[in-house]
Each structure stands twice: as structure tokens, then as C-alpha cells.
Length: 327
Image 1: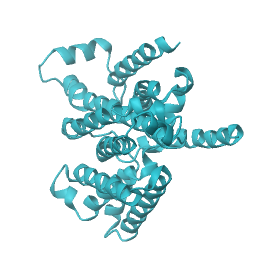
Image 2 (image 1 turned 180 degrees about the vertical axis):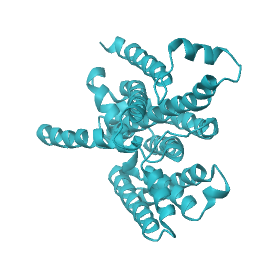
Image 3 (image 1 turned 30 degrees about the horizontal axis):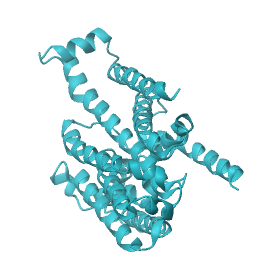
């Protein structure tokens, strides 16, 4: 089963990717998609596939993958089954940065101002969390992340409360709900380098995660540099999740759900969870994005809202499951 897990997930992603190029307000045939990708002639079908659906597909894979990977790393690092990127305030910090760009009108003067401010917000947030938790261990890091996340959330609420006009408040709320609609290759080019670099840093923590299951002291006795591991994990999360949030808005629960779906299939080993969690996160976001295009409730369904509607019950089940199995 373990040997077939990654090939099965890759096959699922391939099928979902093909379906993503076909699905939309106007469905495309497989032959039409193949022709649009192969023929450089500027046709309407090629415009829809190459300039609208393909960057949306690439972003879904990147965003879902980094959310799943960061969730798996943080759960192994913190030894907490409820850990995910939002726990350390990365998503909230990125959201606050984007809200500042929208509130003060920077996004109206510069197209990429919102994602750039969001990326800066994620970096500042994780730097503050690291500074507050220095020398305090895992518990201090979690508490610092929660505190920073609360401060960022208060800033977002204040911006909404003091929005200069209803249009600004609507724009902020729309961005906060998360979406892959109207994303272009510019967004891919902005986010991809940071996401890939963040993923590389997160994967470097893999050897230490299995040792950490024995506890921090035992891991240190086995030669694990806890400070370096923590710095790699947090920097990778800030870069990757910050960039993902910067281009899509807030998308929660993926980093929580993906590792738990695959962990029983890999023998609950933190290191073995990383790649399957990455692929599962990508599949979740890609499937959810397709659902937002196909499911209609009288208006556009936002990606973050759809994922939260699925993730919140899962989170509740997980809390009850942990309570039942806790010693």
C-alpha cells in the first residue's frame, strides 16, 4: 500500500489537472484542449486554456502543495496534530499585509502590490514569532504564533471597521475569502520562486522529524540541531505559505487536513508523510477550485469558503478523535 500511495496520488493529480482544463463556464473537449496547447495560433480556445485555466491550474498545484507540506512539517516539528500554518500566524500576517495594500490604495496603483505586501506581512509575522519565542522551546513558539495571529486579526478587523468606503470593505472581504479566479502568469511568476524555495527548506527538515518523535532531548542526543531545524521550518513556511496566501488570499485547513489523510497510510512516520501530504494538499485545492466553478449558489463561491466548509467539520472530528485517544 505504501509503495502505491505516491503513484496513486500522482495519477489522481493528473486526472484532476486534465479535468481542470476542461471544466468551466464553457466546457472544452479533450481534443480542443490538446489543439489549443499545441497550436500557437491566437484563437479564443487557446486564450481560455493558456491564459486563464492553465495559470489557475499551476497556482492550485503550487498553493495546495505548499500548504500540505508545511502542515506536515509543522505537525512533526511541534508534535501537535492540530498544527498548521495558521497556528504560527503566517496566513494572518500575509492577510494583514494584503489588507494594508488594499486599504491605502496601493493595489490600485500597482497591480502586484497586494501580493507583495502580503509576502512582506508573512515575513514580518514569522520574524516576530521567532523573536518572541527565542529560547523558550516549542510551547513558546506556539504561544508566540497565536499571539501574533491575534494581533494580525485585530488589524484586519480594524481595517474593515474603518474602511473609507463600502467598496474598499468589499474588496478587502473578497480578497480575504480566497480565490484562484482571475489569476494570471504574473501571479505564478511572483509566487512560484518563493513557494519552491520554501518547499526546499521544509524538505531539509525531514531527517530531524523522525528523531523528534522521541522528544526534543532525545533528538538532540541523536545529533539533531533543533535551532537549525526550527529555523528551516519557519523560514520555509513563511516563504511558501506567505507567497501562496499573497496570490490566492486566505485558504485554511488544507495544511491541517492533508497530513492526517495520508499519515495512517505511511505508518505515522513524519518523514514519510511529507511528499504524500504535498500531493494530497495539491489535490484538495485543485478539486476545491473546480468545485467553485461548477457549484453555483446564486453567486461565485470562493475557494477559501468552500475549503473551510469542508475543513471545519474535519477539524471538529479531529479534536474529538484526539480527545478519545489521548491517555
